[in-house]
Image (cartoon, rainbow, N blue to C red; front, top):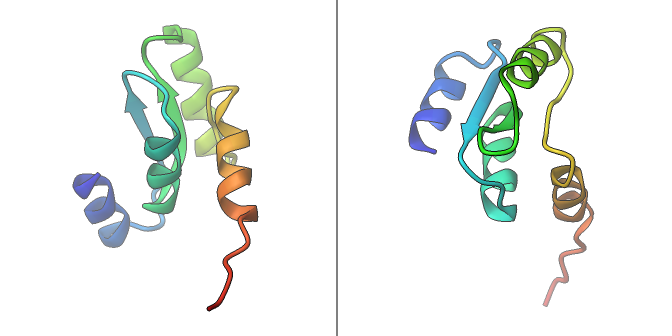
Length: 83
């Protein structure tokens, strides 16, 4: 994650796809918070899927495994209570 953060701070204009071995809520949210535009799970996907994810992100889109958008929406929609 430190490398992703450094890359994003140094080159914010370059879209980044993070390759992960397994899906997870915290990893997903953290990756997108640190500048990723795509998240690709190596365990569940094919080479064709990797190519599609890179093309999607390169053209300005976002790529995430099928279950991940729910994590991201939950993270964005959380209401923080002020004490």
